[in-house]
Amino acid sequence: VKCRGKEMIITIHQPEHLPWLGFFNKISKAEKFVILDNVQFEKNYFQNRNRIIGSNGVQFINVPTKTKGHMHNKLAQTEISTEGVNSKWREKYLRTIQMSYGKHLYFHDVYPVLEEAINTNSELLCDINIAIIKSFADKLDIYPEYVRASELQLIGGKSDLILDICKCLNADVYIAGPSGRDYLNIEHFREARIDVRYNDYHHPIYPQRKTKEFESHLAAMDLFMNHGWIEGKRIMMEGNEGLSKE
Image (cartoon, rainbow, N blue to C red):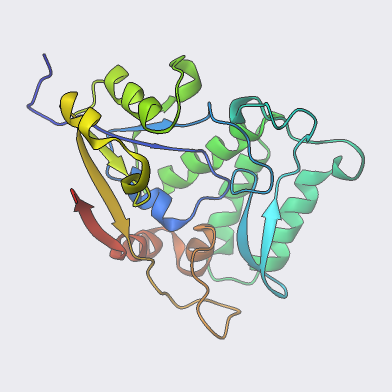
């Protein structure tokens, strides 16, 4: 029997690289954040790269990954490539950040946090991404309990996997992104007495250095480089339309 004194609110998301603002907005509302690392790795997706404003406008910054077997590897197993031209990927990556954001007002507040995460002693992409997510969340005073889906040893796909994770963790509420409307089997959640709510997020516009027109849906780091952690969180939460049941 579930204790209804306090709802157990869970959200689930892949550990994207340098996630966007909606990602942190969503996990700020959950008691537990399940890191969906047991899905297939997708090359050239947001799992190993994201968009920043570089010297010549919007560009991707990426973590090089080993391509052999990537069609079969789970995200948790995906290794970083450190061979050949990628032998000094960390130095190149951090230099790109320095060149892109070195003159931003809050560079010296944000860069050391990212630098420490990138220098995490691991050759697994997931470990780097999770280090960034956790360290950024800490700076934003967001403290969910983190659970790695790979450690739950559940199988299944899409809606069934999400439901099984929720059941395993005794969820009362599951916070989905807007796309959850397209694939979640709501009847099955109702039968399990799990309330599904959608986090509809409208990207806020903020003063942004180095652009003539506002560039939306960049890595959340862009906001924090421009406005710092405290003001950045306030702006981030402005995009909060609330949780919808429809």
